[in-house]
Structure formats: C-alpha cells, structure tokens
Image (cartoon, rainbow, N blue to C red; front, top):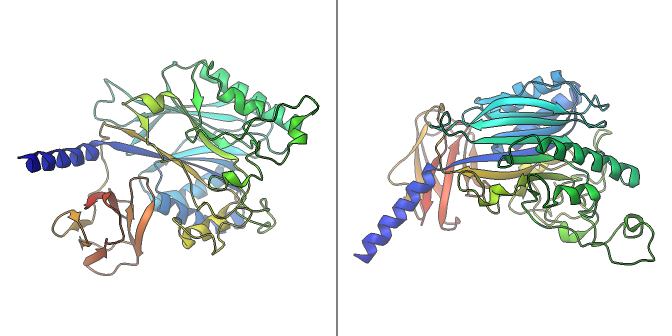
Length: 426
C-alpha cells in the first residue's frame, strides 16, 4: 500500500510539472550589429546560439538600426523559432543614436501589450510590457514589465555618474507602475563593481519596487580607510571589484576574446561582469510567477576561462565547443539567461512534435524515438535549460539515444522548433 501511494505521488508530481509554463529570458550584447556584410556574416553564429539556448524572450543591445534588426529577425530568429515576433523598432530619444535596444519574443507564450522609450540624456532605456498567454489571461492576467538598456561604458568618476543618472531614470519609471509588478531589468550595465553608486541604488530596499540580483553575489565592500582619497582609483584591482577578480570567473560575461576580431570588440579575455538580468524581489516569493532557482546562467562560461578566450579548448565543460566557437565569433560578450515559471498553462499554437516515444517516456538506459518526418536536430535539455545531448542531420525514422550518462530527473526532448516532449530518467 505504501509503495502504491509513493508511485501515485510520484506520477502526480510529474503531471504537476507538466502543467507549468516556463519563460526563458535571455539578454545579449550584439556587438555593433548593423547592416554591413560583416554583421550579416556573423548571423549564422547567432542562429547557433539561439538554437542551443532556446529562449522565449530575447533582449538585446548594440543594435545599430532598424534594417539590422529586421535582418537579424529574418535570418537568425525566425529560422530558430517561427513563433517569434519582434517589438516595434523605436528611434532613440537620447544622444546615443547608433546604439538601440530591442526585444524578440515567443508569441506562443507572450503578447506584447505596450512599449515606450525612457530617455536618459545618454542612452535610452526601453520599456516593454508583456502579458502571458494563459488560458484565463482575460480575467486574471500575468504581466511582466521588461526594461532593457546599455549603460555608459568605461572607468572614471564621470562615467560612473552617467551610469548612476541613467539608473535614477529607471527607478523613476518604476514609480509609475504598480508596486506589485513583476519586473525584469536587463542590459550591459558596465558596472565594474557592486560598490558603484548606480548598483547600490538599484538594490536599495527603499525603492518603490525592490530590485535584486538573482545571484546575490556582490563584490567585497571597499576597506574602511580614511587615508584613501578615491577608493575607486586606489582599489581599482581588488576583491572589491567584479573586474579582474578571479572569484567571479564563473559569471564573467566579457570579453570572449583576448584580442579584437575584424577590428571590433574588446580583448583582454574573460574578466568582467558587465551583463545582467535583474528582477523584482516578488519573483522570488510569488507562486503565480516566480524565478526558477539556479536558472541564472552566463551562457558559454564553464567557469575555467579567466583571462582567456571563450573558445579555448582548455575551457571545456557543460557548454560545448561548438557553442563556444559561435559565441566567440559573434560577440565580445556572453548571453545571460534566467527562467521564470508559472503554474498556469499557456495557450499552445504550435504544431505537434514530429517525434514520439516508442514505448514509455520513463527510461533507464536508453530512449527510442519514432520520427514521422525529417528534422534537423534532436536536443535534450535538463531542468536548468542546459543542453545535455544533441544530434543533427538525422536521416532515420527510428532513433535510439543512450541515457546512461544522465542523472535521475526530468528532461525535455526537442525536435527543431516544435513543442518539446518530456521524459523521466530513473
């Protein structure tokens, strides 16, 4: 009797997991992506990244113009997932007229309900409001307020002040929306340390909507030394910084390169944490929509590439050589991802998957698939959204995949851009 109850609870848990909907958010600095042949040639590498990561919400900066946005959408995003749509392109209202932000999103899960530009006097902050496409969204909507920006680069007190002033503009915008709003704030923030005033006011608990870093991993505070004039200059390379601090090597996002490629981008190797997705604190505590613990990842960073280039063969690990090669070729930054989850189902408009299980979806040593039509690739993801298996150029109607190396748990199997199937490794 006890065994039957355990089995019942086990399968009930599996069914409950299946009812949940995840929204994988990804931010990426596109490195001066414009309408040039050079940018167009890089696009194939972005397509590889998108196919590997499979985001639902794709937020970007360093997009140079509308034509570039359209080319990227048609040649990298739509081939990855035909359900994606793009936000209206907004011209800059700040002086930096060649550096734009944009979002692209999975319309199967999200509906864009409004968009606006927040000028800062330096670079815009773009504000997008999304509604989740849940079955009862009309009566009980779930909305996400998404802000994307690119704060002023470089060291020095003047640039720190510009970053601070832009953050103040963002916080002012938060005062205009309901205090219980779900908020994502992403971008290339160019913070060298959490001791910067811009970072500190972002995380101030007195803000109308409290914004937190999902990693909660600040740098050490500056030492209390009254004899030091400017601590930012005196402690410019220490544990008080993300920059040049090996203890942050597993979350550094820039630079993917030790020298420029095609005369563009930063070199110096992986030693900066410039790229962030921050969130409202209620996403840690609310059951209707919540942050999936440990889902925040710096894609391509295996934690062993400090001061080196991301495609270095010695930097192997969870993220494959193929992915790291693509990341190296496309940008001098790495993408940041995090996943939100709701217990509600989204309204599916996707086609049924062309693959199905032969036998059970609860497996031990291997899983066997029937392929009703030709697919380009079959990919297996773990619950963190990480790829644990991928096979391409499949020309058979029956495919067997060994699962001995997988740990026990829930996995998702995806063919191209079709709806994923779930299986259990016991």
